[in-house]
Image 1: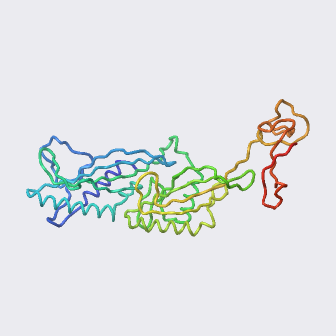
Image 2: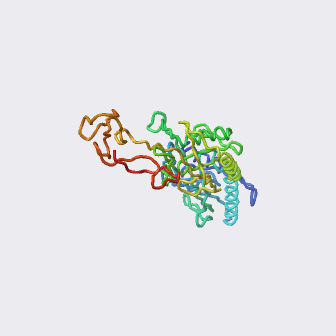
Length: 349
């Protein structure tokens, strides 16, 4: 996937347009970049002229998302300026219809597109000293770029995203997830999982003294040729997630990924959004290293401050003072005694 591939797909869409009123007419040319303004007139009209600009680059590990704004201008020439304006309007209507119903993903080259009208949309344009009736639109596209072979991100694997990829492959086997080979269709959508909010420890929830939860918010971009098919794919995904919510998802290390708060939206209008979003959480191993935990054992310390090698001399090196003093122990607090423990208490060795 590249910007050039997306622009070429947009030009193909524009060149396919045909109208029957007020005259039968076909788009003659779609320029991926403006032609020479010094020529006396455009050689092929009606035509589209496209120019692009980079809006931002977003990090969706392991992908880079490049967001571009493409200005698309339609130029129509007729001796009767009112007829030219009607022709431009008819082509604009056909363009909106084709973008919405058959090429919303620009041939699978983008993971999101948005069509905006400029104010005003119907204008008089000049090229090479001649006047044309025209239409101008803005198309916002998100182009995903996979890491290059041998690049610093080529070997990147995230266990949470990989879990979502594995679940999708098993639950929705017809869905496509390889950006390098996919060709999304209504029956075989493309899907891209990514982080909306990166992971972090979940406050107030723990399993035992060594394990808690880490949580994040993830999103899915769903890609289909039409917005109608996109809505159906969104419903398919949310139903499948809802059905499997009680069973969780198996992670590569053999633990489980839990998820809740599934929500969806038909439109993706900017930022790191997905048509489907949800909260996920997974096991967080909070086991501290040997140089922190109390190291019960026999015999005196062999060095000032205690040992760090797990030799079991009763003087662990870390926040606990060697040779005596308060330490931490995981037990049920005697003052509670209601079976609701465990709690963390201090004890003196």
